[in-house]
Length: 163
Image (cartoon, rainbow, N blue to C red; front, side, top):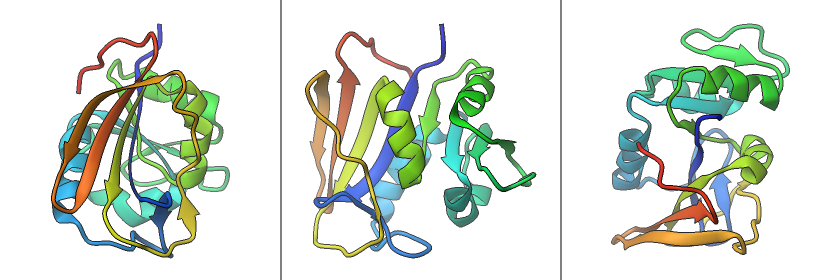
């Protein structure tokens, strides 16, 4: 049995994830929610996301998915998703997928849980969260915060995951 795979992301109403080398918003309270969730956990992310956010993240273990990077200081590099998931699941903790867009798209069909923050406001960007069919998912938590809405979805048939 593999570790639960949890996608964690912040996006706009139009699914914008990022613009250039960052996010087009500054919502520290939402970013703290992300940091609290991954603290001490296993994090899977793409190389560009690691370069932007990675070195300061409080995850216990980081697996970077990259076809080009040979090594990354502070993280384990894997070249394809099956290898990355095998490595990440070896730490026997839930695996948090922290982006970017391509990694989210690859992980979405395999995910057990989604933790999605929708930032309030209109934002332009060049990276988007993949569209997903909510059929087969059940909303188990929703919090309407002043600057964002947090929603947690479980795949139908998936149990609660720690972390």
